[in-house]
Image (cartoon, rainbow, N blue to C red; front, side, top):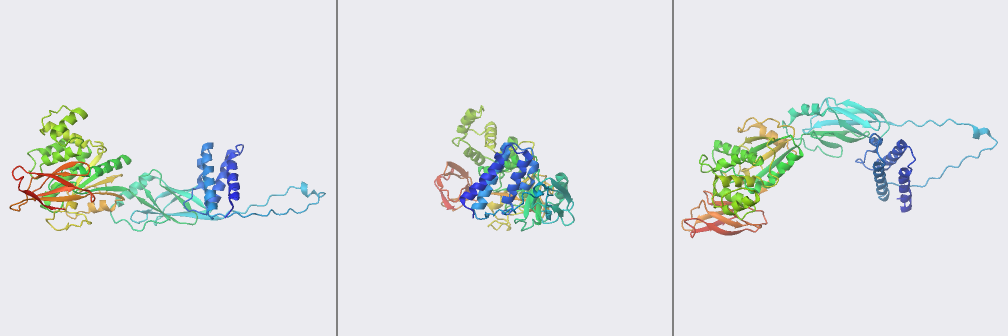
Length: 526
């Protein structure tokens, strides 16, 4: 390992190359690049590609070169201090004695011919995400001021041979629109290939405008092309049994979808609804579509689409009412009553609601609008959103419930999945309602490259009549959460599902029933 003094001396030498401001610009760039390659090439396959920087730095200003000098100095300090670079003194050769009377001093000697640089090669193999070769892809190899265009063969291989000198280069895929069109029919047709990783593999997203990767000479490189698709899963108690109302617990997932779309505008959203296995097939198909449509309406602030669910035209089991109003009130910065919401809405949102404590159509519309206006939960109406209902046909495979058994009330299967396709939905949605065993859903799943899994933890409270032991429906339970109190209403089985994290401390404050208030007790809590 060189001494600190030696390291300092060479660091100063690097700096002096820059400080020689009277140097010609091209000479300065060439010198800095030569130092950079000598310092970094032997030690790291992920080094900066100084060998291709001349085209970038040819017109660089002094500030850019200053940053390059600082990078080179840091690279030298790291390589030398870590023992990966040695410095040895070299003895200067003794000059032969020359007779001053000889005319040798006046003779001009022809310079010795420089040894030819060794020739090398660069090779790339282009695969799709399933591990199949991509034939006909046009690649541009670039090294310093040299470049070569090569097209992949039937094995997906492109090779630049007989390259003079230089250990590093870069490859860039060209004609990206043609490449995307070539690969689009492949998406979702098979299972993603395993083990497509390692130091010789570069994963390239077809969303990017610049698909390129660094290369080392005589070292084959694998480029894997993929169409990034994100799936956001809202799993658990985001929906009540038989209902399509989207609970507050889903808001974090909705915000994730909005953020994803803002990062990749111009894509499509596919919302897929699912149910558990209680109920008939057709009933569950309709319910799964309704859940997907209500998520779409929430994303696009479609108040009218939500308001109709309070109407008499909806079946009693599916109709929204007091419970859904309470859920929305609990999510807003008011005291949890209709009258407090009316006062808050008039002051904070500029409405002119009558403060009468009645959830009439005008108040409900204002409440839905405020609930949909929660921060970060809206996409533009111009976004193309497609819905698809799968009913009970595709239970989640990682559920601990007996999800395949008919009649199972499995909260984990009452879910909605939102797929974010940046380059169009492939394969296309066959219809609004799924058919049992349809291939499209599994193909969408196979393409997923990123997953956001938002599971709502849940505590189950069961209320029964203390004398008869019968389950009691429509009982209001007020529960104190870590931040504030919320109310829940029991279903026909006497169950109230309370969203909760594993470490939340919950307290039941009230159990309210109009005619049996003195005869109710909690039969079970979990």
